[in-house]
Length: 579
Image (tube, rainbow, N blue to C red; front, side, top):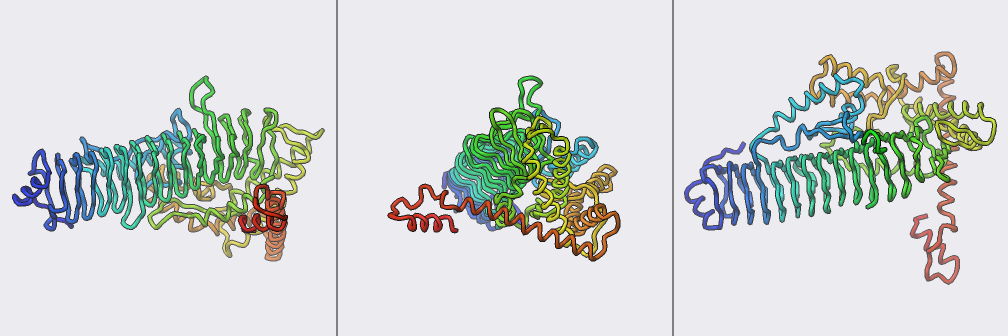
């Protein structure tokens, strides 16, 4: 541990000779191996702790800071702590509903799962209140100090104003315009970068993340493995793997892999995860009546096409693709893997259409391949394509399509303001049946000892699939103070995740038993697994056919510009597309 002592007279004289000034030299303390040769043209104020191997050059003001070993600050206007600060901890962020009511406090150990519990389970107010008190007791109060920290080997160069900021080890700040009341919660060895013209206030940036290129934000959180550039962010939380550029986020809980790359894109007042926003994606949460109180829930895997628009409130079912403009407040939770399109101002639904598309298959493969989390990440992410959460919704979709088909009297049915052609219902039934078989067969293969706690309904806890029974047990433990620390809550979530296979197998055994009307025999389990494998093969063949259509030479428009014959054009097309 570093031991600090006041500057010696020789050290003070050398610093003055090198262009340094101080309001009070006696308030500067240094370690035994401190070298004044590394410091020039700096103005010191308040209390300072400066460790060995620190470099400070051409800094307008440095005040009330603990500057740790190997840190480097150069060509920077102000690095100071004013008053007493918790450095972003405890700041409430109004996610999902811009009008409030789902606030999540900022703190460095925040995960997608904790944010979901705090924001979504407001029907159990005692849980949100106790989690907020834990955060205050364990993070906000201990973080409060009149001294900011510049961590070991941190690099700060050509920056503007850093006020009431803690910077973790090895973080790199270059060309930052202003940071106020926040924490860069990095660890040694991580690549954590805050870049040119970034302006943040009331924030937490976790390690292994990149915030760059003019990003502005207030009341925001950037989790492990996130990357943002030229983004406007207000009251939003971004978690592992999210990558957003050029657009705007307002009151967003962006779960893992929320992706937006386009300048004209607005994500507002919603829950997103594994989401892909096309250019011009937009939502409205203000109907010019009661205020901005409407919200959107976009379940895992949704995609919005270019210029897609949704008037909130709305609920997009898992792996739904939205094309066009929709003003009827759609609820497609019971129609996962569907296509929602606009035609002549009406919203048309094609149930299960994405089960026969190549896109979801590609998504399930790409997400784990792009996992940027490191050893310090707290977010729990399940990538399985076959899981009880989706299986439940697929089964619901099948039952609802069958019900609607039985009631149909023509070639069109209307369900909750959504128009569905009966031909699409028939196709949806066929696809959902195959998907049900695939899901059940795959889940039956997961564990030799199924856990009956997994038999009931499931949820997607912003990246983590869990039985609702396990979630409710955790909420009860929080409510009755059995689980009364954030570490305890996080440990309980990790422990539940470790039981995923047995929980999921328990769900599958219960569903198979319901279908058969008795406890399944080993032969019946084997038959269900075989049926699942056959259904998976059929769905994979449909996805391959869809991919083949994308690979057809009719899609080679613009390839082989200098081609003298079809063979050259085809060769260019197939080489570029890696077909």
